[in-house]
Length: 259
Image 1: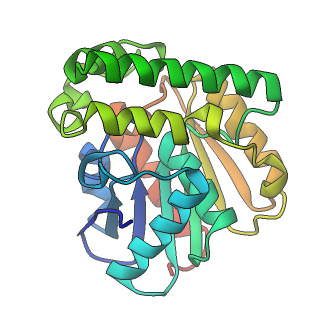
Image 2: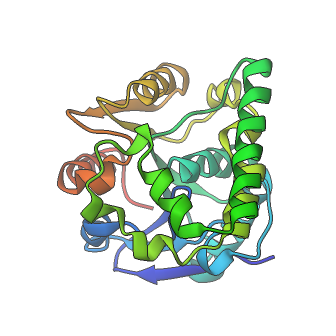
């Protein structure tokens, strides 16, 4: 299995790991600004776009990401930035792969659901949503429903890029939900205590559940900090690209020398 990855920009490598229903190309003006000072390694995660046929859980995906990055930029260290699903993958890259990581930026991230019963309920809900998506095979309708959800209240329609999201398939997204949804993620909070890599946990201030996760990460990982964007929701890098870029770029510039 090989993940599709595309390069753009110049500078030290920064691996981009997108959210569910997105693709490696869907980073908007935020990604354009990052490309001015970084070589972006934009990966399509399993079940998405150019990696539509790849099936892998989160630990397996972390290994595949490491292989894809080494194939395009070599064996040296890279910074990693992940959003939502991509942030879950990024945590596994740091804890369960052999990719040398310089720094990690997590946007809208959680290190997992602690309570086993709640995790089982969430996995069942993810599975039911995957079943419904496959049965209807109505990707466009599913995308409209997904983007109307509470996570995306702060995301303008103009920034959602539905056209790019429709490069995905119903079967690929359903497989992603089953294998890499929040319910499928084993909690990594204890592992975070041993992550010496600098971590930036970024969240929109109005995305209250993920604010709590970001603050917990900052208290847990030895070199982690949290930053909150006023008025920001879950997809804050798409809805507020300038603010998100300034925070990320400043942190990368001030948290040690580039790889």
